[in-house]
Length: 247
Image (tube, rainbow, N blue to C red):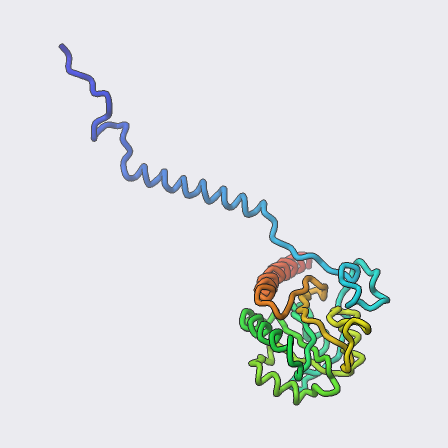
C-alpha cells in the first residue's frame, strides 16, 4: 500500500506563512485602516460656529435701530484706553480673535467669577498673539487707567493678551449696545451706573463678526468658549491661506 497523504500541511509546508509575509500583511492592514480613517476625516467638515447678527439676539441687549438687522453685522471702530494708558483702536485687533466683556472694578458679584474664568482663557492662549481679551468698564467715570492697572495686578492680567478698557461713556455705551450687545437697555435692570452689564463673554472672529455668547460665570461655558476659540483659529488660518493663494 502507498504511504498515507497528510490531511494538513506540515511545519515546512509551502502553505504556511513566514515572518516576512506576516509583516507584509500587517503593513497592508495598517495602510487599509489608515486609508479608511483618512477618507472619513476628509469627508467630515470641520465644525463651524454660526455668524450672529442683531436679529438673532435677545432684543433686550440690542439697540432699537438694529433689532431687524439680519446680515453683515461687524464690530464698529473704536478708540479706548487700556490699563497701561495705551490708546487702543480697532487696528490693534485687526485679524485677531477677540473675547469681549463688560465689567467694573468695584463689582461685588459676577465680575469676580468672570475675571476668574477669563484668567483661564488667558492661560489657554497666553502664547497666541492671534487671541485678544477685551474687558470694557461699565463705570468709566471711576475706572481710570490707574484703577484698572491695580485691578489688573490683582487678577494676574497679562497686558499683552488682556486689555482692560476705559474711555468716553458714550463710546463704551455705543459699542455695548450697537456692536457687542453686552449690556441691558433701560428698563431691564438699569441702576445708578451708566448701564448694566451682563455676564456674557462675546466671541468675535478675525473679521469682526459675532460668533458666540458664553456665560462668564460658568466653568462649563468657559471650557466651551476655549474650544470654540480653537475652531476660529483654524478658520482664520484657512482664510489666510486662501487669501495668500489668491494674490
